[in-house]
Image (cartoon, rainbow, N blue to C red):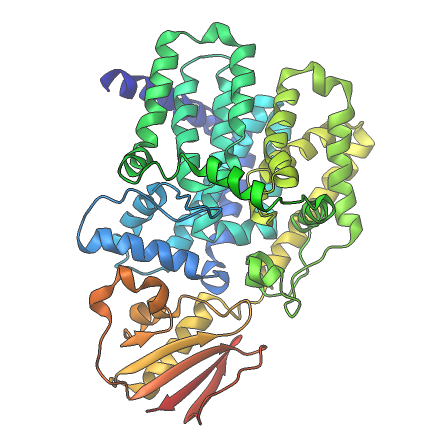
Length: 515
């Protein structure tokens, strides 16, 4: 263990020395620090207005709260892909300290996610200037910092760690070319894949290719340390499997049996359309739309929402840049460019061809930073007139991105919800009440936790059927004097009984009944 810690420390210390070196350079001070400052401001100042708090965040918070109230070991996190497959609990442990500091305020997770987004911005620059040069790194991280779609995702705690982990994995693979010790960091990061998001899982094949290519940097010690680091990182899942009849490890068997009984046909046309749509959306979102409608999957699939379906022009250009990057000869002659193609393929192949993966846009979050590097590299390969024209387009993109984020609607955001809760509390005072919610893609908005934090905990709620096992002692049998129903305004609501009070706030309508 001491040797492992020492090696991990040496890799991390080298990385942070490189960070300090980069930040200490005069030119970098002028550009990267400004980009990082911009990345932080645009995310942090809009998070309270735009944060989409949903049952995903609520579930994670409830799990973290069980640790805060009575510390105990959690062996698994949320379920994933069905088939009784569970992720590791790392993310729950990560969000526990911020929740403790903020006394359970869910907004802290939005701010925490934004900080992760800023780290992703910097790491994209660092990786880009290692692969190519400073200009490529600067353009890529600037695009990342200003993309409205990325910003909206970076404000949500659950997917916000995916781009950062993607970049850590990519960086550690590339740097292993120079020192085998980076494989220890890769092993830890790859173990985190099983805690955070499985869209990153196929990157192991790229790592194996790179390890064979630069096998001179690897020895028995590095292999043993890397295996040990990986096993320690996934140890909670190993323990869970041991006591639960190898539930996770046997998932591939269950998947094969299911596929045998019910063969799944790959709808490549649909998957391709989702991918192309995502390519356009990462560069253009219609201004003055609901930010939450843009990133919540139920909203994207809902016809009544205002989710952006970009013009084909916005899809064509990023696709053209990818094609230009792939077909140029230098890409395949240069191991750095070739690595970038292979890393991108590790995300796109399962997205397009793996039946068990639902082709949802946020499965591409690990790919988007790589896409920005590809585009930036192609821009830098143009001759001066074309390159300077592309710089102007990037500048216009930045300005338009700022505008899109600042004018985005937050009718379903946290400010709206806090105001709504305050109005309900003014009406029901200290009387006992029941809480329920309904609607379309905003039918489930984590209202029980929000009321418990910003108002007063209900005696019972419509969420109890899903989450009550996490708070069994908080469900009261006290008769309720009021029944509060929160509905998504744009979705017709069938009401049972006559309400005494009704009011609208943002995208929600609240009905209050007396018992």
